[in-house]
Image (cartoon, rainbow, N blue to C red; front, side, top):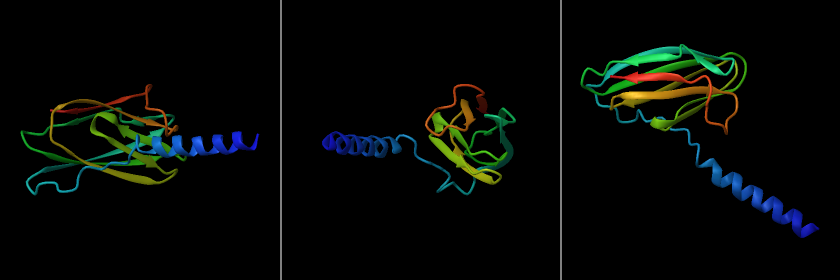
Length: 130
């Protein structure tokens, strides 16, 4: 019986440690070119969603350093843009800044959720980079 508990504990630690790498907190704005356009947005994370739910960025043919300031409404949220490998924890009642370099056009889903291990499937927002 004791071997079972030791094996279970060891397996759980290995699985949780291995899964931690699946959800890195990545901010890819380091090394932004000096000529990059800079844009700022403000969002509120509340009730399992981020508001506004649509952000439009016009690249005008160059890279854009996007800065999003997100205020969490008193509950911990996770903000993510999976296609851009961005994932940040939002502490309750605090503002968190997420910066990234938009170098390609497209429409990307983003989401806010209170569950850190679940990719937001409902209440997605859209980031449109043209």
